[in-house]
Every structure is written in C-alpha cells, then in structure tokens.
Length: 349
Ligand SMILES: NC(=O)c1ccc[n+]([C@@H]2O[C@H](COP(=O)([O-])OP(=O)(O)OC[C@H]3O[C@@H](n4cnc5c(N)ncnc54)[C@H](O)[C@@H]3O)[C@@H](O)[C@H]2O)c1
Image (tube, rainbow, N blue to C red; front, side, top):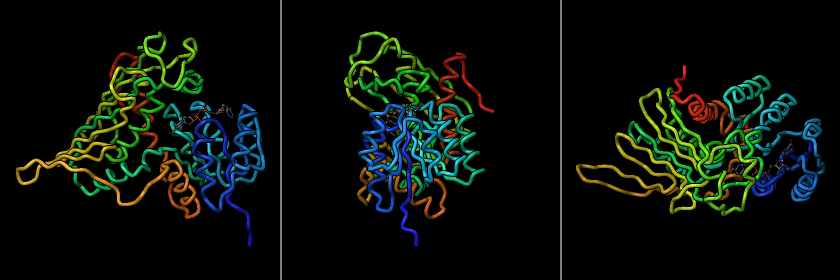
C-alpha cells in the first residue's frame, strides 16, 4: 500500500498563503505541502521553510511539472487565470483565492477547463465557512425568511487600505475594494439567497480619497502614483425573481466602525442580519426579535474551507464553492465597473 501523502503546491506565498493557507494544509494529517512558488525568492524560501516543502521555485511553471494532487493559488488577482488554467491542464485540482478572476470570460474559461479535465475548481470564499454564516444559511433554508425581496450588502472600511501593489495597482488587482472585500459580502449574501440571477445592474466605482492625503491608512501608507483602482464602489442590482440589492464597498470611508462587513436580507416572513445573526419577524400580531447561533464550534474559516476542498477531492464530491456560483458574483462586480465606464445601467441578456 502506498504511503504517499496528498501533495499540494502553493503558488503566491505572501500574506494570505503564510498566514492561513499553509497552516490550514499543515493541519490535515495526510497532506504535505510539497512545493511552494513565489516570484520573490526570499518569500518562496520563507514560506517553503514554514511549510517544510521539498521544493521552492521562483517560476510557478516549474511547480506544474511536479506530481501534485492539488494546487493552491494565492497570487495577486489578475495572475489567477493563467495559473489556474495551467494547473487544471496539468491534471491538478485547484483551490484559488477570491476573486477567482475579475472578468466573467475568465471565470467561464476556467470553469469549462475544470469540467473538461474532470478536476475540482474551488474559489476561496472563507466567509461561507464562519459559524455566523452557517447559522443564517441554515435558518434561511428552513424557509424562515419567506421570499427575499431586498438585500443590503456592505463591505465598508474606515481607513483600512491594503497598500501592496497586488491590491492598488489595477494591472495586478483588476479592482479596488469592490473586488477585494465586496466580493466576500456579496458571495455570502448571494449564497444565502440561493443565487438569484442578476438581470440589471447600475454602479459606481470612484476614487474619493486615495489619491490625496485626507485619510491616513491604519495599515500604513500607499503609493499614490501607483493607486489605479477605486476606493469606493456602490451598486444597485435587480434579480430575475424581482428581488433587489444594494452593495457598498470602501477602503476609506468616514464612519464610526473600522469595518462594517455585513448583509441584511429582507423577506416576506422575516429579516436577518449577518454576521450578527439577529432576526426580526411578526408572530400572531406581535413583533419578535431574536438571535441565531450555530451549535458547533467553527474555528479558522480558511482552514475549514481547505479541509472541505480536500474532503471533496477524496470523496469525489462537487466543489464546495462551484465556479458557476462564482460566475454570478463576478458578473455583478464586472457590471459595477462597466456601469461606471458607460455611465448607465447594464442590462444582462
Ligand atoms: N480570502 C481572504 O480573506 C483573503 C485575504 C487576503 C488576500 N486574499 C487574496 O489572496 C491573494 C493574495 O493576497 P495576499 O494578501 O497574500 O497578497 P500578498 O501581496 O501578500 O502576496 C501575494 C504574493 O504573490 C507573489 N507573486 C506575485 N506575482 C507572482 C507570480 N507571477 N508568481 C508567483 N508568485 C507571485 C508575490 O511575490 C507575493 O508574495 C489575492 O487574490 C487576494 O485577493 C484573500
């Protein structure tokens, strides 16, 4: 009997890879992080040491030649597509950080490659794996909300701007807070709503503060000349079932909270707030307010998603975050930018 462990290669070994992905893989007993690739050699070496990896590369293409079961991609957003496609084509299952891509054309190309090669493609949407999200999802699936007619989705930060090039240089990130954090709250809200199809979207994506010096960053300063994405985005979305949604995302906004990462769903039977888990309804003529909780401990959502992806591969189960769901998320975000560019509402065919 073979004693070979399940082998993973991590590509893009910066903050999120070292902070949560590598520890998430190492927490699984039958898994080894066999190789690490990062274009920055000291980063590849540091992450390789952290992971105890047998191989470290500065060119991710070399990693693809190895006999690996899965590849975990944590490069800046716009580098996801070529790496995902190469990994699928070389027979590896793929876990890739959000946003999977910044255009629907790329998401579709990756999804079709996954179907053709028979490999799992899974977008990291770790917010789904939080206890609060599981509680709201479970409760909504029990029919408690009735028909959801409106969603209010927010990923609003006060002065938390990630100043690394992979976030603020459009050539690498493909977008600002809309792609960085809007994607999380939007994905979680759509997941609970059961992914209604967006049909009309109007949006704005602008720089209000990041080019000037009005708001200092609590995560340090950033290169104002390099800054080429929005620092604020907002959208109004119509879905095919008649429901609507407002979406707001910002890195720099005058508000009390450092971060308001939330959604509120309004249904015919009740409303619910995530992540607070607070719900409001009417029962026999009386107003009722309550709070949901989840019966099991859920720690480290990233590690939970990594474990779910690993389990799905071993069991031949579907991807825990399928590309067709990601397609709906990216369609909305793509339309926010398109609406800003064209100065009008975008109607989807
Ligand atoms: N799910 C979450 O909560 C979460 C949080 C943070 C970041 N992210 C996502 O993770 C990804 C990486 O973000 P990060 O915060 O780790 O950024 P980071 O800048 O800390 O790390 C990115 C790494 O990719 C490397 N890289 C760049 N080009 C490369 C190439 N051609 N080949 C190999 N490596 C290359 C960089 O050298 C860097 O070490 C992004 O897509 C981001 O959106 C997700």
